[in-house]
Length: 422
Picture 1 (cartoon, rainbow, N blue to C red):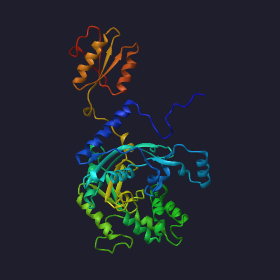
Picture 2: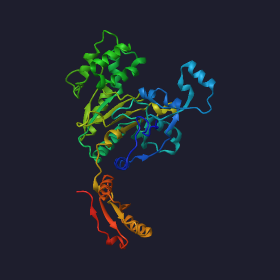
Picture 3: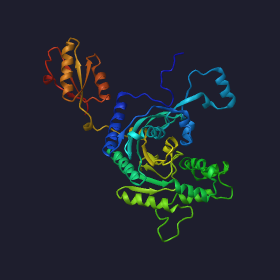
Picture 4: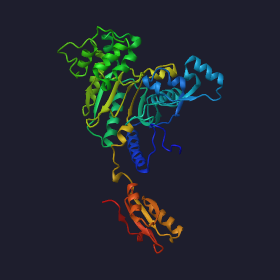
């Protein structure tokens, strides 16, 4: 039986047209981020296993790919099996996001960085997901982060740059959903959730869009986070209809509302008058490292967020021994890239030179060099019997026109181009 030649499940190959679309989108994203004052960095694809499993990544820690230690012995395997700790066999792991590596990067290089550091990271990450439509084991994240800015200017810059990026990609009409972890803590406290169980409870609340109000209420009861006499379903139903009227000076605010956090959200809304901002007290963002403001970008045409982020002031202190304010935003690249079309005006003209077999190679290369020097993308293709199939193939590859080259062709000026697209 022949061996499989497909990529590993949840990972993909990209044909030239797909790769071109992805690179075009990445170029737009990098350009807008840079225009907003962010600088790109690069971190290794692997981090220490202990760092990836430090309790900061929520359920994503369970999805981290582990890298086994070198030189393992049968005694090591037996000891790990006896203890039930498979991670004892690993010292490294593939990163499951770009935020944990960034925190480590900043702790390593802080002396060489400005007091307020604005970073770009665009790179693949890996999670041991169950592969399904729109969910992969390897995917690209596009992150911008601001480290060292304690005030709301960080959130404002991140949101402004992200909305500008989506606009540049052609995805207008977005809505910013916003909340604060302090408000979520107040909600859980009003339900009587013990502090030790709150992070686990938030993971359950984060499933609201997947399992609904009844499912969240049932899971909270099953895990023992909420006692049976608390009507979580009714409380959640009320939260899903909450808006910017909770503390308007007319009626007293709900007991669960952290008024300082809510005031901060109102200030963000006031500072972004052109943006559509919705308050959603059920917005969680699953990562355990968020400490304050959290936000997601929604679009009326899609049933999923186009990106999200928030403030994580406590993470860098885990590595540095000193807390440093930090806030970040990640665009869901894989969710948007397939929706984009490359604007013909945004790429160089692409032509094919179809040559006869008797054309000297030196002349072909000279023609190609002359056209490339003018900013044109050029491909050489030998003439074949099935000429129509050749033209269909290069059209699918994104080429615009073709010209035939014969032994009598002397220079690029003598070429007659025919358009490939209607």
